[in-house]
Image (cartoon, rainbow, N blue to C red; front, side, top):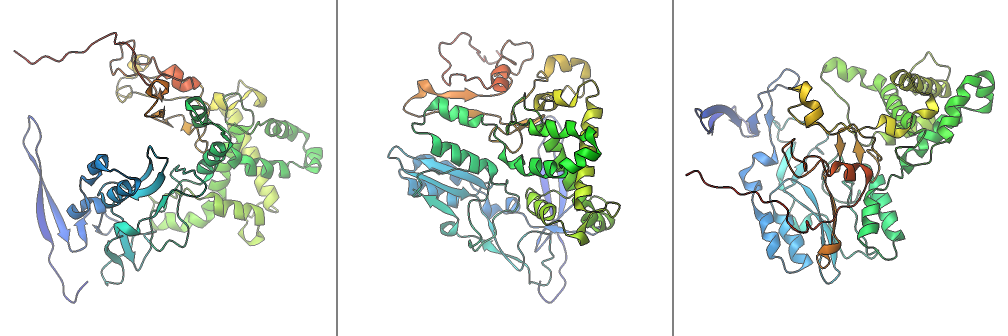
Length: 440
C-alpha cells in the first residue's frame, strides 16, 4: 500500500519465565501486521489478526454483570473485545435475546475465504463492524432461541462473519424438541441434551439402499447382509444401533473419493494442503443426487451407481477387517464409538494409562447429534438450572472433580456422563475439606 518501499520495523517481545532467564523474541512488523515465522507457499507473509490488535481486546465482558435489561446486556457484549462467541440471554421477566461478542473485521475486496495480499490496497479491513450493526435477535415471535454453533443470520446480512459454522441439524433438532415440550422442566431439558436422533444420515442410508436394488441383489446375493444391516438402523446413534457405523464411515468414504480429483491440483501446489469444510454435504449430496457423467470421480466405473456401490462395499470391508471377530449385524454403534478420554501424561507413561485414563466405555451420540460426542470429543459439561430452583438443577461433567488419580473422586462421575444419568447441581452436605496453609 502506498507508492514507496518501507523498511521492516523490528520490535522485541519479552516473556518473563519464573526461575529462568527472560526470553526475548524479535518480531518483524509491517503496516499489514507481524511477519509470520512460517512461510506460505515458501514465501514470507504478514498476518493481520484481531487478537494482535490492542484496540480490539478488552475486558468489557465483565461489565455484563451490571446490566439491568436484555438490551443493556446485548449492547455490552456487542462492544466487548473478546473471542467471537454466541451469547444467549434470558431475564426474570421472560425476555430472551441472542447476539455475538467480539470485534469482527469489516472486510473489503474479499470475503476472508482465502488469504489475500493487501499490497495493492484493493483488499483489506476497514476497521471493525460497528457494535450496533452486529446481528441480534430480541424476543422473537416464535418465543424460542437456539444456538448450536450454526449460522444464525441469512444471506442478506451485509457483512462477512465466519465461515466454518456447524451444519444446522443440531440447532434444527433442538428447536424441534423444544417446541414439543408442553411444560419444560429440568428432567425434560436434560433429556433433550442426550438426544441421539440423527436424521442427518437418512440421506446416506437411502443412497446406499438405492444401489442395493433387487436386481443387484439377484446378481450379488451376498450384498443382502449389507441391506439388512442398513434397514435395521433405528435412526439414532445409540450404543445398540445397528447400521449406523457403516453410514458414518460411508459418508466419510464418499467425501474422500468424490472430492479427491478436484483437490489433486491443490496438493501439487502445496503438499500440506488439507481440505476441511463443515459444509461438505452441500456439494457432496448435489453430486450424488444429480450424478453428472462428466464429473464421475473414477472412470473405471460405468456410472455413478457403480461408483457408489463400490464405496459402500469398500466401507463394509474396512469395518469388517477392523472387527474380524464380529458378524456385521453385531457391529453396533457402541462397539465402534468408544471413549478415549486420556490424561496428558499417559502418552508419556503408557504403563500408567490404567490409572490415569478413563475406561473405554461405549458412547451414545455422534458428532452431528444433539448429544455431540466421539471417541475423544464431547460435551465438557451439561447443565440445566433455573436460578429460582437451584435445588432442582442438574450438572454433568466427565471424569470427576479431583485431579488426583488415587482420589475416589477422580473418576466417580464418568459413569453418569457415559450413561446419561443426572447428578444434582448442589453438592449437599460437605464431607471433606481442603485447607491451604502458608509456609511458616
